[in-house]
Length: 499
Image: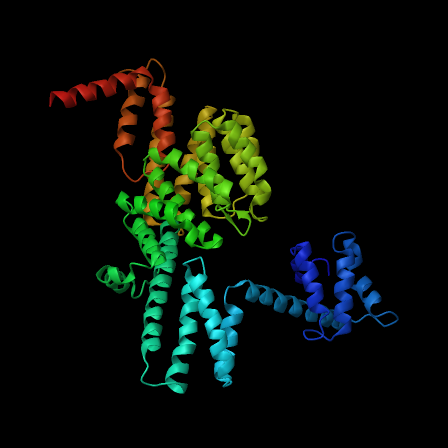
């Protein structure tokens, strides 16, 4: 029983929620089964102390003293308690959603012809909606449901000639649909960018065209304008005006959204910076680092109290690039327990490896990399990138060339990577191989010096498109080329001026 879903789910409840569940189970309205109450009491007594006592046979003896052990009977009792837990969790969600109770009460009154109750509570709900501080999808949906009930009450039970509520209902449906279409399209485009996935965006172009045409009509709908701006920043990320508008809206109006949605909105701004950095625009590194620090400070980076493993990685990478080693090490230790449980150790060890690599503690970096287990394509790619850089730093040419070849095969055969991402990685590996080959040339090699070859390769990489890990390639070439690169760049500048 210790490994059952019931016990695992009960373990995840905090103390306050466990107590509320106990009250729920002991309520005769929700549960009249005495053995289920006894089972919960017994589980609570031992769940955090002695789990051996949660063995099914031991538990059965406590619940059914003197009876012959029955697997079916203990299973049925556990199943009953598990169903109550599911119902309780649904109830918690019901109670946490704004306007839910009021809306269901309104709909109950309408469908059961209790019109005095309906009109009385409708005034109360209308005031609540008008005073609601957030302009989010919860508010749009609640306003639509409110009008859906009141409009049909007006035409069926008051005055059929009054149509203003029907018109308001139709307008609110438009707004709710447009908002949700834009909001979900932002997520679909994000997924399409990050992984090899395709989606059908039915009616999206029509919605965008309609919104642009009727923009004045939606001038008060901040949330619609915000998600439209986010979508444009995703689809047209070479147009910086979209990102600047997004930053302005977040700075000036973020308090108009619920904390949960604030976190999602900030993540879009962060992801835009990540994409620009991946394209080689280094000015976004410090900006993104400051966005992350702000998110850690105000809590907007967390989702249900947890820190996304990819944000954990991005913060580490930026901290290392910017030379914030002490801050980054403190961050990795302080926020490890805020990671989701499943990827926690993988994420911690990978990022500690990255930190140690950046501090030139290459042996320590390899020690941490050995503890990383592949969980998905992203981890495999990131792991190989870091391992490649570490082998290069250790001058382990044999291991490095072998890794480049196997890494290239992995990229070519992987079906979960987009065509563009495959191209970016194959280009990276091609230049990484050239780097390694130049480094292994003997000092007495004829023709151009090694430093001059590194300088020439730097220029090639700088001019190349569709390439990941550009920063590492360019920085490595710059370090290897030394003064040869300065001379080459100076010659290029003089040639450009002469023209």
